[in-house]
Image 1 (tube, rainbow, N blue to C red):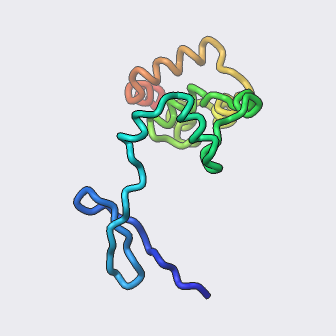
Image 2: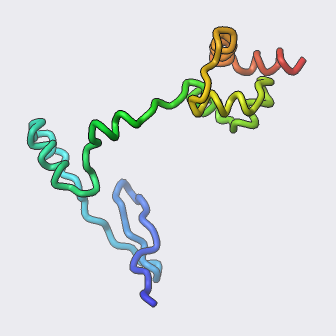
Image 3: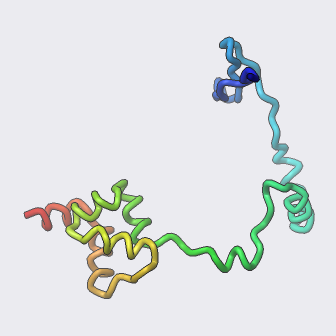
Length: 131
């Protein structure tokens, strides 16, 4: 069995260090030369990106398959709530929240208005619905 060569990477005094299994550290070399990057034009950046197998640009077909994050999901993330917590706090069925987030259905006008009010003052809405 191979022994691990690195346990973790930490930032100490503004520099990244590699922590080895025996507890010793060594400074990692800086990998990105941003001054050099800033001098590249768009064609050179694209050529460099295409040469890196881990950083390939998306194809038009891949881009067509992508969907935006649902505004409902963005609001829920902003509030730091799970689907169940959001559902319970604002008395919206969890299945409805899930369907909105997965783009299965879209909120109607009344629901959109309710979501805008939640976004404006979530604590007030939660108190009003709980009363």
